Image (cartoon, rainbow, N blue to C red; front, top):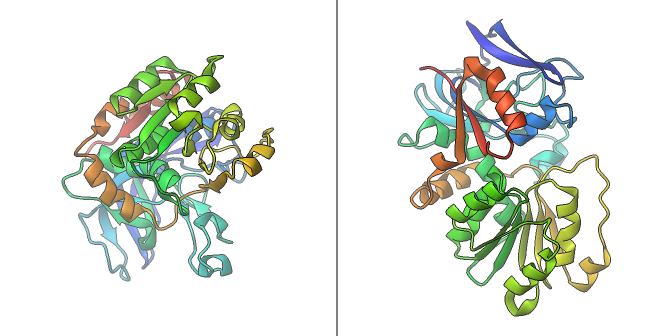
Length: 353
């Protein structure tokens, strides 16, 4: 079966190619892609600013925020059938290595793979893709494809708040760095719990979007009065009880320990691998800050889908998908994602039926 896929050969070198798909294995599923989001990490890889995408090994097909329809199942498949609407995890754990059997995060898997980041796990920048059964998740039939493509980025923001022992309720004041898709997902998660939520972003239009999605307060981190304003908004002049760093900004990571309240739960979610960031470690001790990482999510996708079914009753995800492009116009879509970061919240690729 022939189909078109876009292979990333190196920085700014994304080539649309017609390929012959191999036959699926007994434990695999063939999926027709209907929508795929362009993630900020995709942009950084495309721009040569991140080593997460492995075109140093060989060209690969990006795209880890996708939704599609099952059109063929292998003979060993038990939980899926032709016609099911599905999405997938990004991080693929083998489930059989010592770390997986010990219950560690998927990112600890000794055979770690990521859909859309390497030659052996093609992503959603293609008309079809092949996935193993264990990595696929059904989405409700009444969702459209774009909602399905939002599951992966929403799961990261949701996990930032609740994953690895995190929690939130109406007694909390939460501060979230970054008003991109992941930060806005974390915002919606906090507001579903009625927590007071402060959103932080240097871009005014993104702060305006955060207000539309329920933020109680928005702040500019470049404001000389930033720390003072955070303190004024926190209970008893202390600091936030929850901080989610979703921007991947060096300054935001460093600032998090400065503005945290005592006993603050600090979730580091934005990607900063490969960078050494100065942090005043003493505040971690004296404020008893509890820090957790969020490298992927662990058995969180079904929960995310159930949670989003409730969130959709209150928030309209369509407003966060700011740009739509047909897959054949991928080059133009990448140009917008790279050069209009101020206005492009989520750039979405769509595929003809």
